[in-house]
Amino acid sequence: MAKLKPTYVCQSCGNVTPRWAGRCEACGEWNSIVEENTSGGIGAGPKAARASGRPIELVSLSGDSEDAIRIPTRSGELDRVLGGGFVVGSAILVGGDPGIGKSTLLLQAAASLAQQGKRVVYISGEEAVGQVRLRAARLGVADAPVELASETHIETILATLEKGKAPDLVIIDSIQTCWTDRIDSAPGTVTQVRTSAQALTRFAKKTGAAVVLVGHVTKDGQIAGPRVVEHMVDAVLYFEGDTSLTYRILRGVKNRYGATDEIGVFEMAGSGLREVPNPSALFLDQRDTGAAGSAVFAGVEGTRPVLVEIQALVAPSPLGTPRRAVVGWDSSRLSMVLAVLETRCGVRIGSNDIYLNVAGGLKVSEPAADLAVAAALISSLTNSPLPADAVYFGEVGLSGGIRPVVHANLRIREAAKLGFGAVNTARLGSGDRAEGVEISEYAALAELVGRIAAAGSDNAE
Image (cartoon, rainbow, N blue to C red; front, side, top):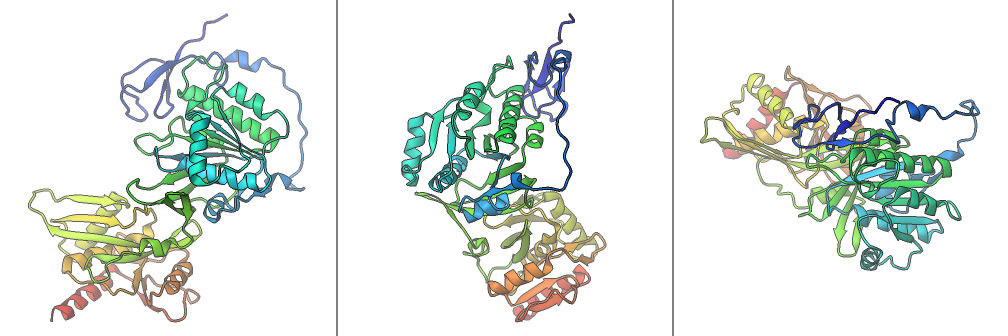
């Protein structure tokens, strides 16, 4: 019998190499490659295929879809991100920084479902039973009939879950602490995480239980372990936020049963996480309406319109290479907007230090924020405060033109609901209108730059 060669797996990205190296060629991480024994489980070699298979029944696409039943958690923000609740038989991966509130959110959701008569099992691999009870008492959910255990052995966990009535929800906190006898490697390694997640996902599909896996994140903000774990589950949720701030954002980056890039906003309080039904009001709560360099961006996260403040500061640079500091937006996108302002609009801004911040800690990724960023930069450069009741959205092209973006009507209606009376954007269709809102449409960025500069000259006089 041929001897299996050892494999070396990067513990940061999951890349497999035939020999050890000090630096991973896939992700560039140093000292992250570890030798792992793949004598069992995934990647076991030819002997894994010797087991005889049995035929399965093939069905048609038409028929009842009872397997897609949802279990609402009665948390509007969590249900929004999930697409209406936990889907029966689904596997969900939840990631986030340490101390961000993952366990708090899931314990509150578990208590809510248990109080609805559902069987909920919470398996903690990082805390003892007494520690979880202390958190439950602090959150005021200690009386909820949640079944609790502290265990990390996958075979023991599955044997416990298969006893009695099938659970409706299973929470594993966290998947990095779990280990299985099928793999001869330490808990937390890529192979252990992958095999444990596969076993739990198979249990979810077989029994109809919704399984939630809590995952740690790396220093780059990605869920630790191989990307294949994200491919195995049905939904991947990231819990974001700054621990120095009171609110948290739950973002769905993958969802087979709902919209992706949907967000739910929570506020951290002493009694746990509270829902924020109107995040736009939260992000604009302390806006300084009279300051130059502040523009309100009407964005869309998933299916939810969100208004957020874009802050810019343009200052003379004493350095040969000006500073560029960006928080909450793509720095390469900022460089593109600056180049368009310099080349297409004749604005001399590149020699200055540029500081850009999305107030409130929200991370904006859509190109619709280009126009708001450009408006904030020109406002700061010319020291011209923008109108307090104006919002901006539109994509800026390399030619200096402003392109329309999707969901324009949704953005305009959200602005009108919060009392904004002026919208600055690209050319709109006839249906993208709202009563009581003045819409200024621009074909080129130079038109908006000229308008802001003219307003600044009038204020100076």
